Each structure stands twice: as C-alpha cells, then as structure tokens.
Amino acid sequence: MCGIGDDSFDADDLDLDAVLWVRGVDYMTGWRAATQAAAELGDALTAVGVDTAGSKLLAGAAADGSGVVRLELSAATAREVALLARVAAARWRKAS
Image 1: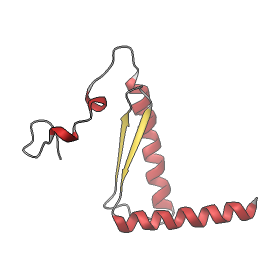
Image 2: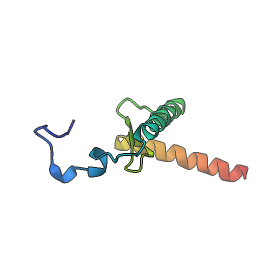
Image 3: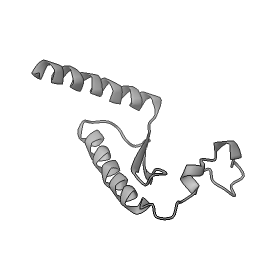
C-alpha cells in the first residue's frame, strides 16, 4: 500500500481531492452508495464467471461527495470483462 508516511510514498501521486474534505459536503452518503455499488458489481462479475481473485473494488467519495467505485483488474481479467461487455452489447442490439 502506498500512503503518506510509507517509504514508497510519492508526492507526485498525491490526489488532493482524495485527502481534503470540504465542510458541508456529505461524503458518507456517497461512500455508502459506492460501497453498495461495489458489492453489486463484484457480485455481477462473479455471477458471469469472472475470476475476481486478483481484483480490487474500492469505494470512495469524490470531491463533490458523490460515490466513486474504482475497479482494478489484471490485464487478462480486463480483457475477459471487455469480451463479456461486447457480447452483452451485441445481444442487446439484436433484441432491440
């Protein structure tokens, strides 16, 4: 993990929006929504057979308080998800 105080911390990677909170912005509601969305996405990926063992779903809140989900996949898993998305899009186009 890379964070402030770690030997591997690089100030160039510092995202001020991720560490500064603005008074009056409801970050918790966005974070809760992102947590639920991350769980739903993880369940959906598992349901379609994607190996999520090396994947990361991270819930957070943007500077405006809206929920944000960050998905980290291996290159092979990203290709698998891309293929599944293309197949689903083709099926939806045929159904229309």
